[in-house]
Length: 252
Image (cartoon, rainbow, N blue to C red; front, side, top):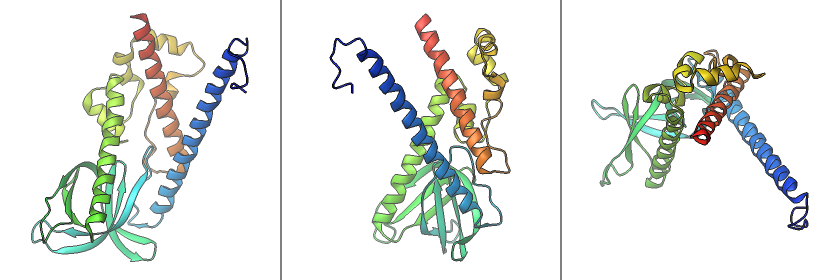
């Protein structure tokens, strides 16, 4: 319709604006559906774990999974584990029957060490977690590189999310915690960042700032609904912060 509307037509600008708005809504819906599917995948996976391990967290998604060999740090003994890489964590456990796993460890993702190519250890790499470092061995160099690339992408995702919250005014430690889903943003911690005048403005709006900033973390009990609500609050709070920063730049 826009292509068929003349450049000097009175409705062309309105059509372009409407198209932009509709496109934005469609992208938001697609993103929401994708996040819902990712959360449902985590819920299903969580039901197959022993002991019960809470992996459902707002913003978390499964990136890659597969069998790898864990190399013990003390004596280099080898044990085969099924490894799960999320965009913020890594987990490994033993398959006890088809589709069910005994989880050995779940830890936040902190870093990666790419081991150099050698004849005997060409497919090994080290994942750095918040609890320990784990050396893993893949069957082929291709599988090793697939895991390395996936881990690098997850680490970049963490860094990007952390920078977003730092740009919004949070200190590095809190920004990292929020990015990992291990910390929450409250109205108290937002106060020195946003300013009294913005809080006063927010109170006059129909949407309560305490409702948007109360907690960005899903309850420890997990659940799809709680995760969706936490994700929605997180996105809403980020939008308000970004909007305020844009307003400040305009006033400057």
